Image (cartoon, rainbow, N blue to C red; front, side, top):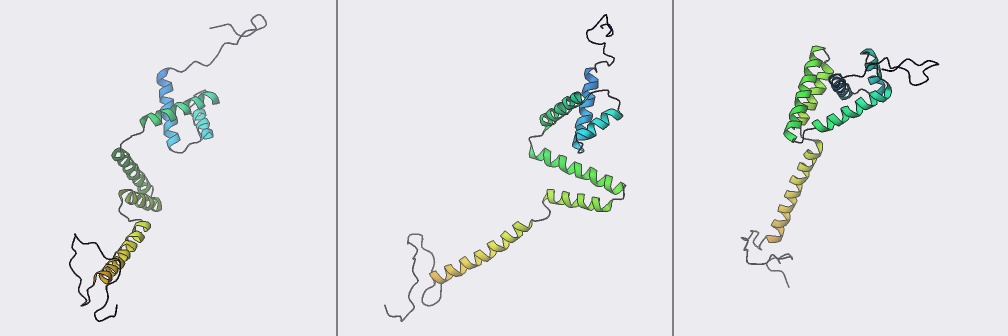
Length: 176
């Protein structure tokens, strides 16, 4: 490398920090990705790097974060089945951790989330829509029965060749 910065050598000072090799950088990016997925923010990553004695500055950490984010996008599954399977596996893992930690409230929340993901609970909107559809179907049947009734109270068979009437038929014995 170069000589230390002195009065005789006013150029750049010799760097005391060695550049990391590709394997080390890749491992660090994977670690940054893992802790980002756990919810770490930039300040958390700075603290993590200091604890691991990486000896990198903020700019390099931001590069690691950017590359970790790119790696995440690259790894995203396009298949819905794979995504659902991964989410279920993550919930099962969380459930196991919560039970082992005797955190039963969290365990129950994870089970609830998994059940919703599997579609075991009908949502409130679907239940309300179902009730509305049943009520609407009943009204339609009543209206059809009223409009298609003959004077003797029976419903005539539907003839596909005839055009449906839009007015109510007259009762027997009614004046025109």
